[in-house]
Length: 140
Image 1: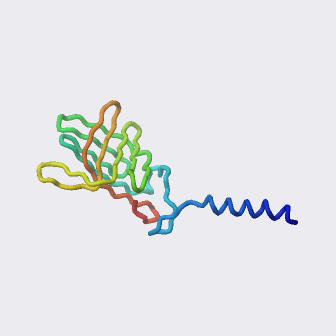
Image 2: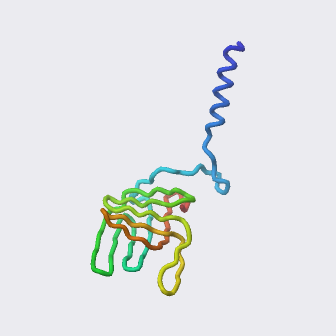
Image 3: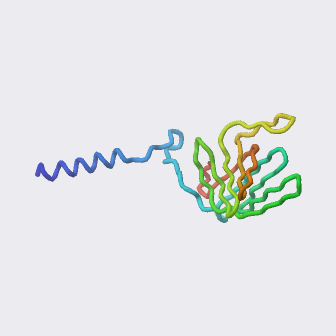
């Protein structure tokens, strides 16, 4: 009987050690994987740099520069990385929104994210802000 009890006890202890850490405010486990974009998500994000603007509205992504360059893409996934940054992934365009204050323009307007937009071999750096509310109603 003792021979069977020890392996069972060890398995229970290992299971307890492998539990996912919980967010102290919500009690929910952090989600580290991508959320597939689609009609169930109301995604809205805007960013700007010295000579460019980016908008994400639903699944439509658009990058426009003052020089007349315009690129559109479809949002494929959103990956919340909580305290670090968030990734908005399109078919051709990637937006990384790093959490931390960012100031842009002569007026010194402050935004909550430092943003890098990558399209092919081009990178655009600036500031941005987001709002994403999945069907559960929990904001990221």
